[in-house]
Length: 432
Ligand SMILES: *Cc1c(COP(=O)(O)O)cnc(C)c1O
Image (tube, rainbow, N blue to C red; front, side, top):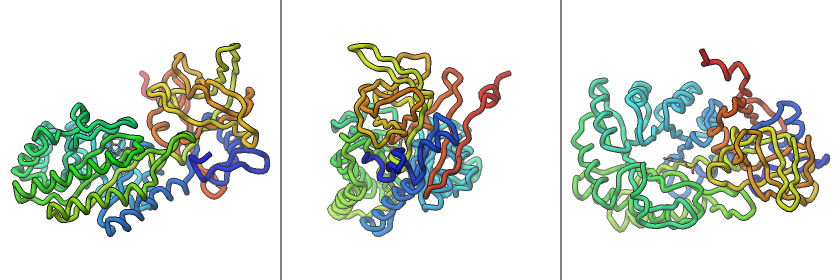
């Protein structure tokens, strides 16, 4: 179980997280249940922050991409950890502000922000708006003018580096719904346009080349292209873009096979590229921003289920059904994401059974994994799916009118609910 160093097995042979017995958590709070390890989350924040200190002399900021897991408590923790926060919608912004997160450390992303969202961001004093396209730029400038404000912006750039899979292609990225392209001059053009506008201040350029990336090279290449752009802007317009936002996308270990980069080694290598490029092009070293989401919360979360019907189809497979599924974790259904599972009440036993872990929704594709090696599973067992801290709760739905599970935070042997389990009343709240 290398996903989280904070998982363990106690004397009863039960899986533990953050010093809590998962079987007891399941009994106390019911299943399905998301459990997040607070120390793991905080340690990830610190590891990123420390490397900003070490490799960029403290001239940078780590912004947590809140879409990975967004609720008030995580925003409070990010504030305590002196992180910035990325939001991509009115709802995420609202959540952050409700949690008391300082607006000036919030960055607003998105490829199609509505007028309503832009106005909300201006009214609440969001620190930076990452502008995706010309349509947005023009509306934002006009709106800021009407509100007699100026707003800090960065542009979302497609650096021409595609790293969506383990394979990367240098030009593929032009086919993306996000941002403006570098290679056809689109980026330069929108930058020039922004420099003529009175109510936007061009602070930065931003790129985000994909997610769950394990290689270093695409990050290095993206950093290089971005600094070349910044130097070109300085040369052609005289304007110095101060901030370079390198996005998120750092891969995490979902199974034993995944080899995640240590953030530190990523930071060291990319910082060398940043420094070398700046030196070569005579450009001042920018303020560097990073936006990890998955790698902050993913490894620190698990989901607990209760096993129900177990169907052995001879010579084909064994379906083990749990009391959740694609409603709390749609990632296998969406893109066959591989997870590791453990029978929490038998965690000390060897894994000797291969199952297809199925959910309870009315969809054949409602699976949490196939060919999963687990301890001998029986109905009534507690099943833990590991590394579910990112893009699980935040992607959950009410399909089949299933209530979203509660989220419990554990720390030092104690647990607390940070998101209540949805109730049947919640389900019909908006029905007329
Ligand atoms: C999704 C996203 C992130 C976070 O990506 P992770 O893979 O979760 O680290 C950061 N920045 C932007 C713009 C994103 O869209």
